[in-house]
Image (cartoon, rainbow over all chains, first blue to last red; front, side, top):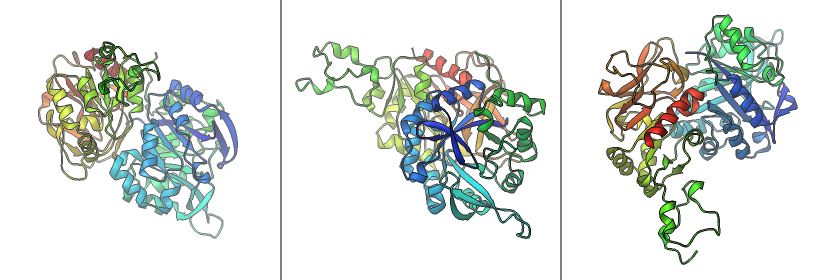
Length: 261
Length: 251
């Protein structure tokens, strides 16, 4: 199957924002405008996350989420602040096809099994914000901790062990973000990707660090990711989805062709 | 308002098109007929999954698209869409709780066009085996089974894949006369599922798709009933073409 090129919108208040290492957020633009832009560029999917909902303990703005969904006829993953099956239903009603769960589930893993039972595993995405820990000299092999609340808080969980557990509970996809590489535009954390690809039997999306078509090729071919998620390089118009796909095709990776209107 | 017969009041689940603005209800009983959604497409609201895109997609091609769980509204529809995402059991239970199983069965028997999408397509078959063993709507013989273990691919089958006319050659006319008419062989659609459609009768297979070496039915149908395992409403402009032609079938 063809790999998916996913555009990601991080939402704070009424805006799409983007930072580096999930910090220093800059306003990029209006969510619905960017959604339309990436749909027209040929994105295969969109991820929209309210990145402060968990931190502030509030529900996302579902009207705003719906305004994003209005622009697209491609799959849409939404997340932010999910604490219950009802929250998931609200996202689905706002136009989501899949929902991404992180913060609450790290403390209440049973939410994952409940959600899978209710909506099917293909609907439930585990969002993991992995940050390197103990990779300094003499501290042994590299490890990652799962962060929460938009990459700001410690969960105390080993990211790899947490993903394994969530897979056992039935998540249908893993959206793997490297907090260390997020927003850096220096390529993906290939070590992190390899560590998860080694056992993940569900689709794996790598996010954080997309640089250019080569970096995507590397993640898809060498890293065995099923999809790549891009934000900064699209937001700052360094690349369009179309040009990224052209680059992948040149590397022998077939992509979905969007019929011209 | 208070003097109007109860039947005059549109159920709250009717689409905006049928709801008069507050205070503008015309007291003439004859207007009642005009308000009945005689040619509407009803998306069945049974509590599972994303109906937003289906609504938005259908509205591109039809003015009368409503979302409803009201048996009366469903009975009056000219065509039904059974959307859905999620587990088989939750789907059937969602229909049962709302008293809709017989409504949908009767609609199908009466020749009303019905489009099932993803879980909605799976419910068209007799049985499903997700988290147990469940009875479906039974428009076609057959069952819904889990993807067998695939050698080189993961499940769920999630992403873009192509659809083809069945290799068995049982459809000499191809997709002619179905909502897939005019689509290119190998058109790419968005799939997201862990279970597959297994109709008993190979003639009920309208299109098939291959994943991980396994070829399975991706569109099934018989007469006025059609089910897409993929999401036409999520498959860009190509998928919308299917919705457009379904709307035309319903007109």
